[in-house]
Length: 85
Image (cartoon, rainbow, N blue to C red; front, side, top):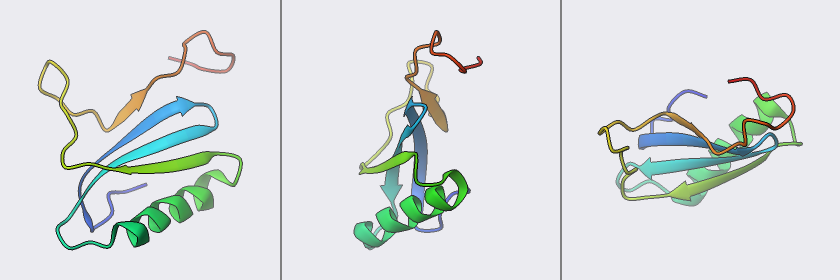
């Protein structure tokens, strides 16, 4: 999913093979509930209904100790079947 125009920064967190969380820094004046629905609808169109999609709104996405903000973060256990790293 490409960056939505109404956002300043986004990060996708993969929590499970069927659970995603979007961390979103919305642009000023954006209706967050409309934005939440847009993210969820776009994900469902690509991934289907079997993947749960949550959206968290933040003031900023904290960088790693190296000062980077990765676009995708996975908290999956690498030993989970079907996960390739």
